[in-house]
Length: 89
Image 1: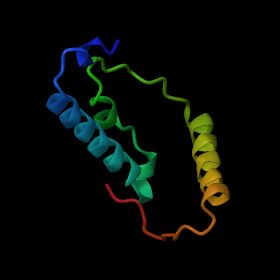
Image 2 (image 1 turned 90 degrees about the vertical axis):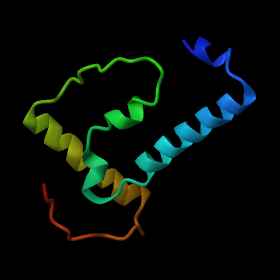
Image 3 (image 1 turned 30 degrees about the horizontal axis):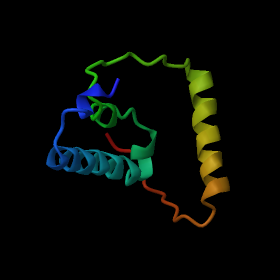
């Protein structure tokens, strides 16, 4: 799966690591409403060029998952700043 790395020079490998780190940082630094979005830009950093369609839960199951995700943030990050910023398109 990662055979493409075998032929890269040291400089090319360093450039690839930097590119991947930048993508991970962009994802890590998502905040507010951006935490809830589909992130194909992160997956596009991989060499395989696929764009699989996700299985999307129906609304009730999806909303339960959103609520559970938000609860997990309270559990894992109880001291994180909170926002009253409404969602805007």
